[in-house]
Length: 173
Image (cartoon, rainbow, N blue to C red; front, top):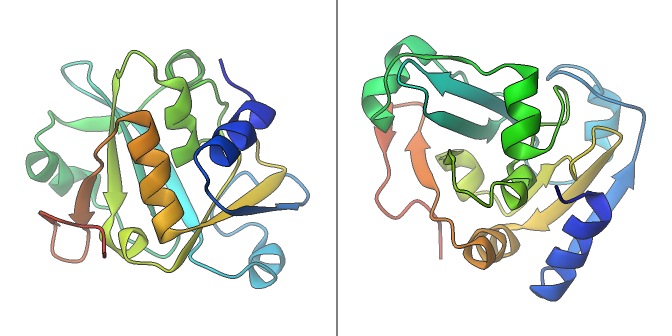
C-alpha cells in the first residue's frame, strides 16, 4: 500500500500543485473546526461503504453535505448501503478509520471501490483531504483533483446530494 510520501510523490509526478498543513489528529467531521478555519477551500467528509451485494464504495462530500444512505442506493446503482469495516477499509484503501480520503483511491489498484464525488466538491475551486493520515490536510485545486483521478484512470461518479441525482459532466471546466 502506498503511504503519504508515495501520495505526495504521485501528486508531484502528475504536476499537481498541493499544500499540506500538519495538525493534531482529526477523526470526525465537526472536530478540528479551528484547523479548518486556517485552511482555504472546501473541507470534506468521506464515507467508506459496502453494499448488500458486497460492492465497495467511497463517497467524498463537502463536510456540510447531508447524505441519506437510505435513498442514495438507487441513485448510484448499488444495493442497500452500510458502513464497511475497518479491516475491509485497510485492505481495499490502505487507510484506517478517521483517515479515509479520496486520495486513498491511489491504493485501490484492483479497482474494487467505486468512487462517488459530491457535486459541491467537483465544483469547488480548492478541496482538502487527508493525505492518507488524519494528522494533516492536503489542499489541491479542482484542476488538480481532476488530474489526480485522471492519473489513476478513475472517472468519479458525481452526485448532486441536494437533488439526489447523478451529474453527467460533474467537473466544472
